[in-house]
Image 1 (tube, rainbow, N blue to C red):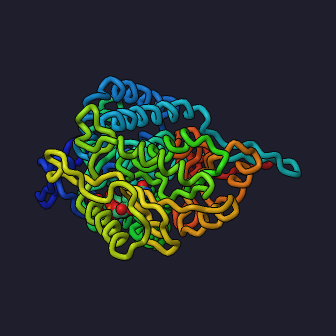
Image 2 (cartoon, protein in one colour):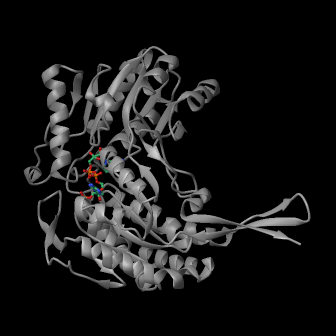
Image 3 (cartoon, rainbow, N blue to C red):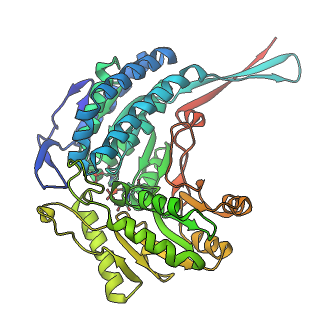
Length: 474
Ligand code: NDP
């Protein structure tokens, strides 16, 4: 844990194991944070608030700028640590670490745009607004993209003058702790950013309950998000919920099939399928389905599954046993109920050492019926259900049937079809001829069961600032 700028043990003295999901090896033991630890971390953030809030946004931005430089210099070491605890291939881990640095640089650039408004009012007066930080903000984050999601939460909060307590996922706290130390070494005053390791039920819930915490940003499972929102509501706290998605990808008959195949492979199997904006349902026009599926199958069969630290690995293991059991159960159900046809994958791979980690083959399932769990749930793993559709109307109707609404994509060369997809797909982010791309410059977030609130883009600052209105009579 990191409290008030220093590494700390748990008040109860207990620790838990962080293991490599590719090998089962113990990486490190970290303290199991208690309610008392949360109280200490929040106290540190409360004490640091006045000093940090009174620095200029430009000074805060310079800390980010220096930290981003160090993160880039230490990229290999940080990426290796991320692969070891999360499982993703090194190339993906390097992307994520660069993404972390890029987010810090983006908010450093935004520092100068923190400002209020001048508002002329009728009569002999005028009004203006000033923006104030909220105080102590907090985030609870998952294990799928721990570095990137950390940056999306801490950067807008800190640049706005808030102080912070972060609760990482229990399977991936190590990269988060190291990145927080980098920020401290780059000049973040003690207590501005604190990291508490520990279970969701204990550390997570006491963080949400703590009366000094003014805002919670959560990413994770829907049920946990609802619990967090309920606890936050009783304390009148602001909440942002990013609860995942079941993104549809629609391939029309005029699409560039090569590029759609590449997009589907990257969109589904990046990070072993454990990404909120992954392609989780694929709708392809009947007229091109055979050709598309055959190209897709060939591409998927070429993916090399293995330890993320091996240079030629395309897809690493799932992150934890819960994930592995879930994916095995879903695929077993497809087989038992004959809900679709497994056209490749569907089992544990058999390379040397595969029994030590949470490996599962990249899997394609075609002819999936409407009521299958593969289409209704957020399939957070390397299994892609494929559905054939007659036309775009049917594809959009099927795509919108989900309770989620995070991302969606339509692949076509026809501008009218692209426009129809953009207007009629119910999602927070709609891509045309691509899927998956996110950037700190653009708002990110979902509608429907995917949560509420937005991350990224200049508007996110309002989530971490309050507006004071001042009216002057002259
Ligand atoms: P959770 O929602 O349980 O975990 C996310 C974070 O919330 C973790 O830091 C966790 O801590 C914490 N947490 C757990 N319970 C509570 C609680 N009662 N109060 C406060 N915080 C809590 O997700 P899982 O890791 O169990 O993943 C399950 C499923 O969630 C996945 O299969 C996937 O479908 C979805 N998911 C979606 C993500 C996305 O980005 N869309 C990301 C991760 C998961 P701890 O790690 O200690 O349990």
